[in-house]
Image 1 (tube, rainbow, N blue to C red):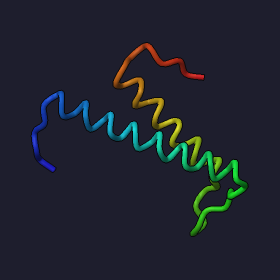
Image 2: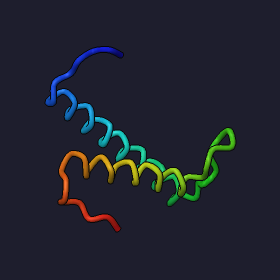
Image 3: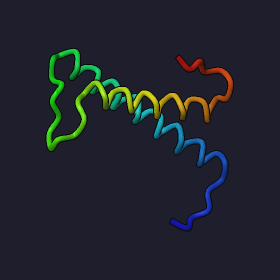
Amino acid sequence: MSDVVDSDELLRRIRRARDWAHQEETRYRARSADGETETPDGAPDADVLASVYEAVRKVLDEVVDPGTNAFD
C-alpha cells in the first residue's frame, strides 16, 4: 500500500469508513433490539459490537468535522 493519495481522496476514504461503521452500528443495534444478542464464533455480543462501531463512528466524525461532535 504505497500509493500516494491527496487530501480529497483521504477524506473520501475516511467518510466511507465512517459510513460503514454507522451501518454496522445500526445492524448490531437492530439485532440487539430483536433479542439476537448472540454472535457466531464466540465474538462479543451485539450490544458490545454496536458500542464499538459507535465509538469508531464518533472518532471518524471528529476527524472529518473537528469540534462539532459532542462526545457523550
